[in-house]
Length: 64
Image (cartoon, rainbow, N blue to C red; front, side):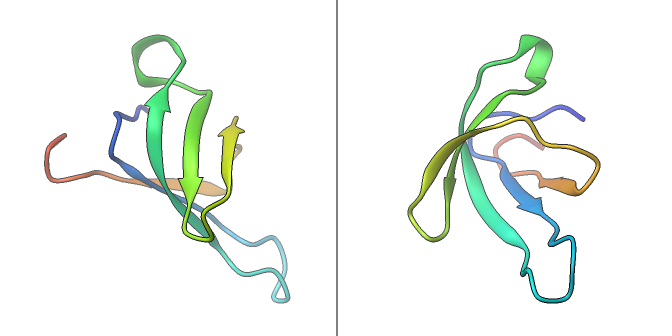
């Protein structure tokens, strides 16, 4: 899946006890919109993410 700056990412919790993590992609560092992504999560934690099969990208209105 490809992303652009400003898109939202949702990483699904792997168990019932682990909630989904959501954040905004601040920077796409991969080739052609691929990972890794610099993400600012809703809890204000910033991290480099190489998402697996448990993620979804929600397009920002600017990237549509």
